[in-house]
Image (cartoon, rainbow, N blue to C red; front, top):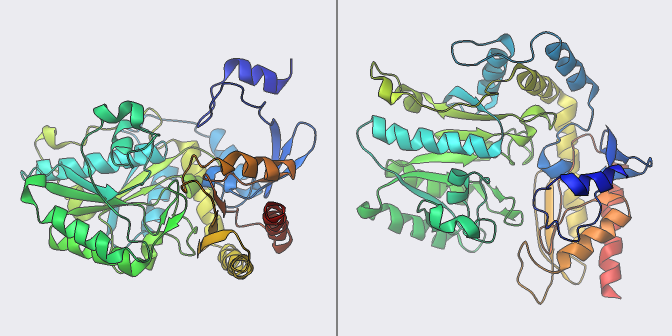
Length: 427
């Protein structure tokens, strides 16, 4: 029996309807932007393997540092103990995070980073003896698949079976172009209602990824954050997808005038090498947990909190972000995207073209609503996979989000395939 056939017999894949599913492609190797299957076919990874891969697959520098670490110390309990790489990573993250961030809490992935942030915020108010457990989030947002993260995510198909078990959240429209005033007015009405007891606003800065790469402008988000500060509401920036260069700056929050109180990180944190999450917070929040009263402790942890190998991978990834070449590549990709966007604007059937940093997205006109379940999705995906290009559309939304090592020629392979697909739809 083949590897893919064995897989189908035993493995349950994420976001996949397993009945009558196609056999999965067996990837055995990665090189830069390429993934290589068991038959030596090469696939261009134009979405950074679910937005995690920053520097390319099997990067030799990260591989070397991970190998050194696993031969030295693979893991240690993180309660009562620490290790050099955890401290180094915290120091280096605090140098690049918004200036008001002072403390790092490690976890395992994006969802857990969000869970930690929510617990920090809610318990902050409890510890201050001013309990405020109401939360505001963007409509159609996505913050993860654990229960707290699902609660602050948009109410849709992803959470429908569990909706009765989720805690209440107040949702507002994201301040996309044309809805900036509506978004602010909605937030003002909610925060002015003392019965809602709002203490937290969580948001995806500038880009709502799973919603379809929906984008808004920094000044619009700044107005929302400013009103939260006026009303003494804590703000959580979910930078799980937008962090580590994706928007053209280290964090999407770097585009803003206002600093968040808490930041969630994962995905590109290790350059896509290993699972690791981190949640940072301001000194004010951390101080609210310092007490002779042990009940004010943040009672949260994971078996692999602060894992040395994952921290080593993250430090190695930050080594690469210290190189001017990385940031020149980010700007070059952004420039190529802008040029391709100008060409897309002339193509019939292409709508709502948007771009922030290394992320380019657009929609195919459709009789169906633009959504994750738009029926165009499967045919789009199949077209590109047949041409050995990995583009995983969000319904009828096609996007490119490549590793930073991608060359112009490799980018043009993706652009040419997209052009070919659009031409096939026009005939």
